[in-house]
Image (cartoon, rainbow, N blue to C red; front, side):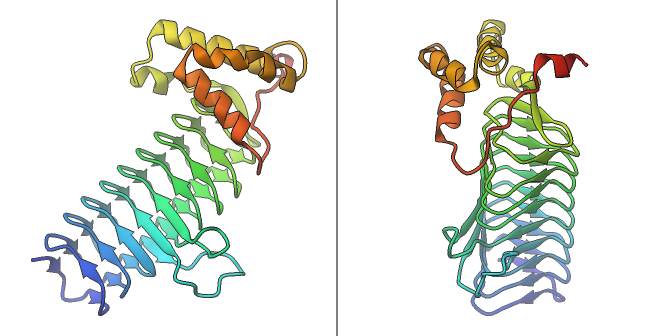
Length: 268
């Protein structure tokens, strides 16, 4: 039987797993589903058509499933889905989707969302994401698996961040960040690859050298970027990571690609 504190408010229609824990002063709306082993510590607000998976921990003053911050929203029954094993820290916010944006905000499994982080409407966040304090997504962003976003970083709506990329703190991300990329700066630019993350995921030295050589040829080679991109396309056969980067670049259409600064600017 689920443990529900006497001060919590659970609206009729809510579905709460038998072993879930609902702490003091939580509010759970009528269209909410809370999975097995999930714990709302206290003062958590979960409303809208929201599903929280198994084994999640939600800390005080988090607000999940609230209406999107979109002037066109008209109370449509859009959704928020949060995967298993997520940790959502104090005052983090996640909004449901919008009808025009597909109606779904989706967060993958095992995410760690630190205090005051925000997932905007119609975003898709992959598995094993880490959002540091006050990391913020505008609407319609697509975030790959194992992405790290630093504190006080803002990501423009419709931006894509590829899998295993890292974005430094206090960065404004206006363009798409390639998989395995490392983005930094007041207005984000690429500053190489997320080598530490790649090593943690068992990239060999040979493989790191191969992907880094491709990166340097693409972003620092001679000629125009489009010419380099076309010339490097056959390298997709050399490594899965290279193929993933090339596909990511090819799939872009909403936002410009986040690129590296010229070598001279980097050296300065």
